Length: 413
Image 1 (cartoon, rainbow, N blue to C red):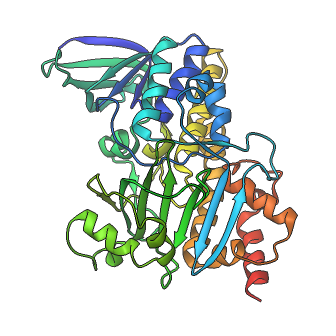
Image 2: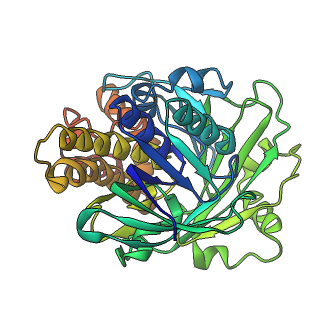
């Protein structure tokens, strides 16, 4: 069997893998990316958060993203039983970007992967990792080349360090038995892309629209407008709720959408031209985000929930932290991957988790629909919704659970 060597091996060419590659190439590291799929390919997670722009810029990919023509985004709109509110991310507590984009992930991920390749990373599509031997901290992975030219060849790569950015594929958690149950109930999503057919001015295309089911506060819909007159549309609910709906995935999604009057009216002229898909039990966790010779990035480590579009931001943050640790190691410094990578990453993840749990319990919905919000608190909340979940100068990051609990009580009084 042919054996190759690599400095840094990255599994997955999605956002986490490509940004990590860009950052590592700036350090002069040799980077090999193995991607199981052929890009472009469909993916959800299409509404970016402004915090993401810092990481895109840091990886040297900002111009590529700006020039791709994606839909501008400056905030989030919420709708529930006739109530409407919105957050403008430019009006926030934290310093940094206040705008970003809403993207077709097939195009966005290809833009980032191409940028990584131009920066000098080697990107191989349709190369699937099938086994791993940690080899005392010098990982050896077994790879199957399923590309047209590869003909199914199996080969191995020995790397100095391995980053798993395989997303929902979760390659290392599966192969190394690192998976643990999520704390969240089993939820699913049904989703598609439609030509929305909306009239100009009928809704703010610069914001994601999050709509709540009129009778069940833990059932919600996303509507993410794109720059070409189309949008991503999906619903999220516990699996036992989704099981009530029959027919094709498209018919099930249409039935649930029609139960929300505002969304039904908005999409009255939509063309449902793409078969809907579903994903069940997407929340995931792991025993550890790192080990001898490897670290898990983004969704390969933990995925919370799509409600606040945090997935890509967490992926970028993990890439940023991991690249910084690898640079310190290359400089001969001692790196504590728990203290320097896992703990800082989980700080922001735990902040998002607090808000996700409160959303499904209904408390955070009371906060955002509060008719007379305190402007300073609203800016702090806006910062977290914009992705600044690691800014500990924000009281709702530094002490998120207690602060949010107090605010829930005040808004319930």
